[in-house]
Length: 60
Picture 1 (cartoon, rainbow, N blue to C red):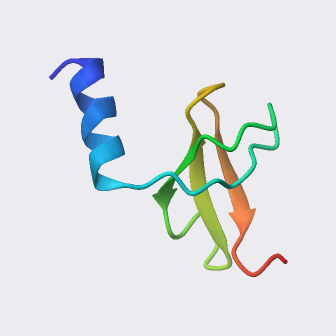
Picture 2: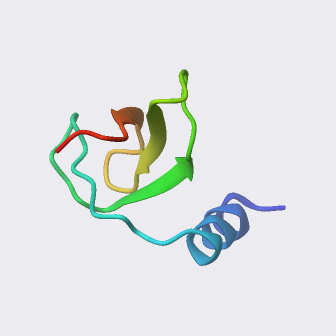
């Protein structure tokens, strides 16, 4: 499977969330996993800088 096909399937299965990337400030992010390193964190992928980051779920 090519990289383009994998990236395309990820975008069709998951919606963009608009969570701000801490590395580049972009809001073009997708939820990768509802659970990160702990139950209180979610794991996101930035489509612009291609980094994965975690965010606290109940942060206001």
